[in-house]
Image 1 (cartoon, rainbow, N blue to C red):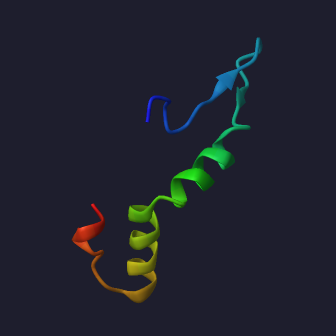
Image 2 (image 1 turned 180 degrees about the horizontal axis):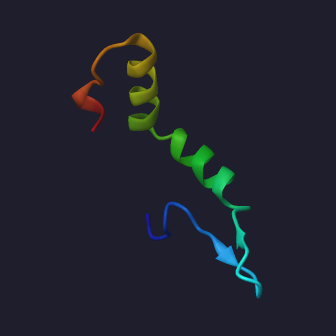
Amino acid sequence: MDEPLVACRSDARGVVNYDDVGTTMAANMMQPCALEGVQAFIDKRPPSSSQH
């Protein structure tokens, strides 16, 4: 990944704009290792090491 995981920009007043955060998080959650980690958490088991 060439871009930072969370891109945030501030305006002239220094207020941070998090518009891209939701999109970035949703894209990252579709990665196989993230899906396996979430499922392992739900199942209360260690994540499979084959996904990493």
